[in-house]
Length: 451
Image (tube, rainbow, N blue to C red):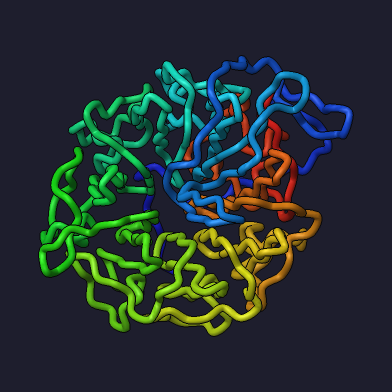
């Protein structure tokens, strides 16, 4: 497995986890025994929309190229909004509720909580974008969100120009930057790149370009602001884009006619083109003509095609299928029939099936399999069901094996590794994404960031 260098100060030595049955970080248990954040501020607004970027899903006619969403808006009966959409970062999670309120929680070392600094915050933080938020995206250390205005805001890590404000800096952007004049129908935010689909369905990306992942026919320095449109080799722009998924050094797109195309690094076969030659123009993946969901990790990609999961790219931990190795072309993952969405982590992958259950496969090292079995170096080659999860309508993942699932009733469940311990010295005031002080769960736990 190729190491993913997300930030220069990432510490790859895991800290130990203390499994205590107590609530911490300002949380308290509700009547059902769930640790619930206390003291968060609630905002109000219109119903949340479902555009965004990351894991792509089409569930019961509801299309979303976000990291999560549900078609069940409304409130919980007490005037509080319910979670309708979410995104999963390396050490933070953001969620939009049915009132259009955006909350983020977890690590703030790269300004992910948009507080104006990188100080730890002990509870989920409401992020005010001067209007109801319709979507949020970000699978690494940055965040982008859209409002119903419409307006697009980004913040967080900026070492490769990911925020798009024209700067390259090791100093993170800790307040939302508004992309004025940029019309965005869909947005995707990854570790080193951000991509926006405009209302006409064409795609523009910015950030890192060392493998030609911007699709401009060039390879070179990062581009820290939106520029030219992504193109195919014949110089035609990539059109009719329905969803975008961003890997470490590659980008893949699903089109409205259910094809998929990729561009950028192909050293591990992550473009799915039958070879390992990188491309600086987008190229369509052959044979995949019924694609309804798309997700990209550091160096592997998975899709739902005709109701089955296919993966390609790096597979040294079994994250792309049963046979260890590298897949240059799409390869069927057995045991995923009836899939409607897929979410890729670094060494594990999960799929949402049409009975609204989740199955996962890959390596157990970080808890991403989600079945409650203790972490180990065991590779799970046959997808196993994540227990106790029912009525799931969306799934999402980070680059480093943190997975979350949203139910039809607006409840959020997460499992895997919150990589807070990798980002620097532990901060006793920092919230974990699980809101219980733990940094790893091997099975799903309910996370309730609402006041």
